[in-house]
Length: 362
Image 1 (cartoon, one colour):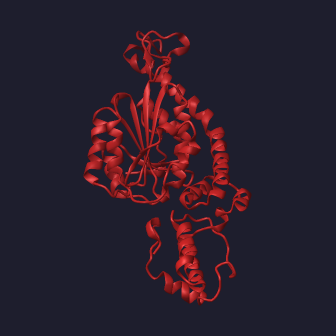
Image 2 (spheres, one colour; image 1 turned 90 degrees about the vertical axis):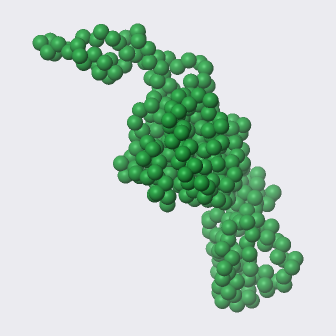
Image 3 (spheres, one colour; image 1 turned 90 degrees about the horizontal axis):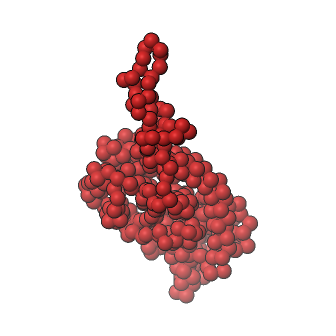
């Protein structure tokens, strides 16, 4: 009944008729606005039915569509949209309504999304750049460091055999120090993001982080979003708002196809970090998906699996696939935006990931 938008057409009209009696308009009853997501074709569909059905039938169908799909009329009116309190979740809802949004609302919607994105960048960008710059510097080890560049932890470990018990000291025959990251690209980062409806907040944060990482000269960052198809949004990374409006929330999931695309873009495995952000509900070929992860790790790629990149913690996810990835050395866990820079720093330095105890799923 609702086309490609994903409504469950079963039993809809009977429920709506019993509730409304087919006699009152959708706007005349005791209604209230919601903020749920919508199917992309709903606005056009609601307009089309006025051409083909009498008013009383249209009223019943409209009510059923609005209730079933959580369509919020508030978000389709520029005056009302400008008055709401914008946050990450509102952005996710706007993205799900993107194709249903009237032209008169789109400019207002972009302004709301841009405000949220700019606020997120102000909060996250400085710390992310500082953390990753330090990680890139530390990943370049040198053997004759200046005093201020000595990595004392690694130096002591490397010289424990030279411990003098009488003097209770270690004689450092070999110094290990931090290097300084070169001006050229040192690491390749691929952010591979599931754009199914449940991942809306993760898509927003991934777009912001992608833009921040892309602004760092020492990182070559690529952003890939996927459902059953794969879209490379790397060229849009200079403006995360364009990235967000280039996504299509909802639809199926083919992780295997997305990872195949990522594999095709890897040229320096030992210097590449792949971050898969997905709830792992795979609609593609499970064995091939796991085989691709194993192959990437065997080639030297640092592979990170995030069940979510949001403040809410782990969503519903496929535990079997999470366990299988953990067995391959790629544990799947939820990550907050504040923790993401530390996760990326650990991946760049090839050290153990800072996985929260409550969020680790193996």
